[in-house]
Length: 184
Length: 272
Image (cartoon, rainbow over all chains, first blue to last red; front, side, top):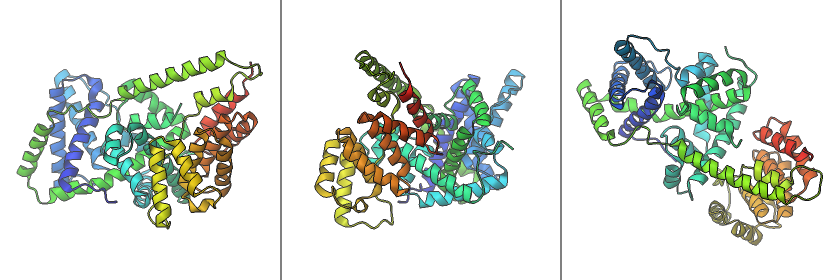
């Protein structure tokens, strides 16, 4: 089943998902919502302009780049307002890169994309709704017509478990095994 | 402990942790290889989903100039003003459910403990089942490419619907009506798990155990889940020795259920 969003929907989903993540990322700084709104708005616009002009080099996902851009803007705001530099928390993709070389990451990502294309439609849907669209379990249950949120949660867990198991096997075929590996 | 790693990783990826929790999680990543593996595979899955869905973003920008992009971003802000950015997933809602479940489990355990028989084990198999056995199988519709007859497909869908609605007696009825005594291959393997779980819930553990043993022996992608269900069926049928031996086998394998099986094994061996 094709679940890809239309172009316009893709931007809207990116906007709202990025906003949720950025607000959660920034909550420790206890800034007013209006301030965060302004920073996010500026960051989102910069992101789109960077994509349009080719400054964004496609080295990762757009959402990770967006959070990084907004994190930099937040840091600049704090420095200007309070005359101090904060140690900004790392964004998730930076932590992941700590454990993977660029080559390894690229290879692993190709394997993952391939496996995702082979995944059964129902699993792909539930994982996409959860990990991409950030839907709550009750919403997922409604969209996919499960009895309730608990069923959706179980389905998501089961799909994730199967996917992780298959991915682990595929990755070990290309010599990638993170369980036995320490950070680089 | 149910899906503890999964929950931790999800909360971390979604920035649902406090600053201190994030720091502790990042520290754990460097020392716990299982957590590290779960985190990296989930992160890769999330990245792969994003890469596919984000293709549309670049496409949409192709025909827009800077002024159009500016006005679109302004419009997005206005559109989202009414919706709180933190309105999505509220972990607190789930916390309440967890607390309620934990309390219910505690009450049941205390009650059973009070009624404890005179054997030397600290916990009965029923107590261990209630307190430590949590994973249940998920319904899975036939995968694309699998060849099954239309009649079987329809019966299977009916079975899945009943399972999803929690009508285990109906699942057992459908199984007895259409598949009992026939070769297991006629029923999609994922549904055999549902039948076995339903049989166990309907207090027909013996029949469930027979089915599950066949699935475990088949050594296919469902064998791991089948073994976990077999452990549950042994617990439900009060077969402590079989449960211990199954749990012991699982905890030494590189299985998804290894940690949970280990806990169950430990609890089954505790003496008064």
